[in-house]
Length: 297
Ligand code: FE
Ligand code: FE
Ligand code: ZN
Image (tube, rainbow, N blue to C red; front, side, top):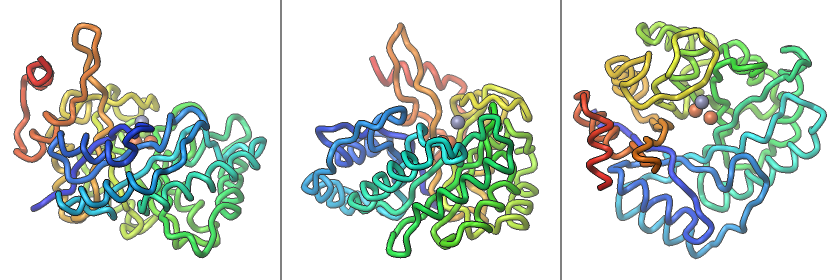
């Protein structure tokens, strides 16, 4: 079975998406995900149309399908808190414009944290904000991410995402991003992944699932922590993650690694080339960290 696998990559102001494509090819990936700027601030550069064309040409040459490419929305956007409603609506609207001018059609979004307002108020704020943001003419799917339930995060249970989807008017523009680290941390048992998919299908519908983040977790199931671990080195483990990636019901869905950079003598190195190699070979590399080190010296 051929898989669509990639990782989080950079997006810098000089090369923009062209740089993201080049980086992902160096990992042996056939898709990728990026932020259009620093996720924690609002500084954004104009999208350069020439660089976008070069990026698309390279993708075509290398068989990367633009429909598999993902942008992650900045996490300063918190739609669950209506105190910043105007800012959130404005900034997310601008972000959708940027994503569309890049030719990308999938935007992953953290639903938000209710910051003490209560779950129901938080969920209704998210619905209200999305109803303001979404427009019929937008050619985009906003993929609400399943969250770990850290602090007051919403989206930790499929029912919460279902509530949002049911109440947003233009919900034909909503999908879901399933993050394996997050669902593990929020209490789902990934050793029985088919049962999770049954539940997802019953509550939300599998046709809504557009992206999977394949991260291991530094913590046990139900820990509500959200700390990603390198592929196969955490509490979910190699075999369970491979079962997710090669699950027949997820055929054709992009799989994205957001595993942490590895620290070697104070320098940080991307683990993705070695992780993607293991995933393609379906064989756990006992010396993953050593291989990443060897790759970089
Ligand atoms: Fe995320
Ligand atoms: Fe994620
Ligand atoms: Zn996370």
